Image 1: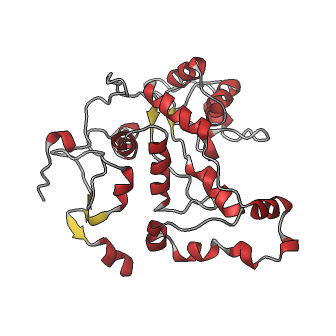
Image 2 (image 1 turned 135 degrees about the horizontal axis):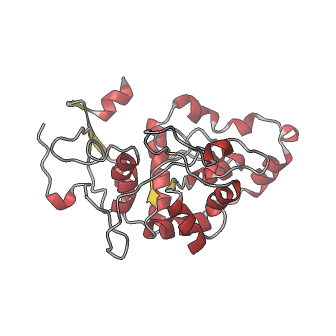
Length: 278
């Protein structure tokens, strides 16, 4: 299938630009270990050994392990909870950090534990029905059996507060040239596998990212981090490309990425509604 689009509409670029229009260099990145929200809990040293400097065997390519001390790693992890500064940014650059903000997971817990979680239209249609059915389980628990913190959250039923600091950090880190990739931490309560990515994209856009910058975190940046920028992540001759054909322009609003018309996988065209009804 020959998919033709004007060149300036393709999500492909040899070099990305920050919000000032300056090109960003190709990242030389080392992922930090996968911990919820990207930091080491105070009572845990899990994964820390993976971060200590180690000598590689002769002739072996550089390891993707970040060479950093425990204190440095905790400083990198603090980026979710405190405003980043130039020292933090320099540390992130030196350790070739990949930043996956997972902004919505905070909201997911707040919604779920206050019993105010409500499915979006995309989640009603595309999320796991068993998980959807379990999202109001708090209604089945007697009030005197609820944990005190949950009972308090339910009685107050406040709207979740945006993760303002993390949102500000996201924009600043992207402008500083730190590689940002898309992720949701789905599986945490309130953050559903699949359609929760649309909630994440909304918060990223609310953080000041353009729809194109949001889209790049889920396409070209992911391919670059995997070392497959020449094969995946963009529509171009010679690339391995599965396509999502939309009914609306994702460069106007990232929410339009949920308006799926067709899916093309391994050269076959699928109707998403037919797949969901299967």
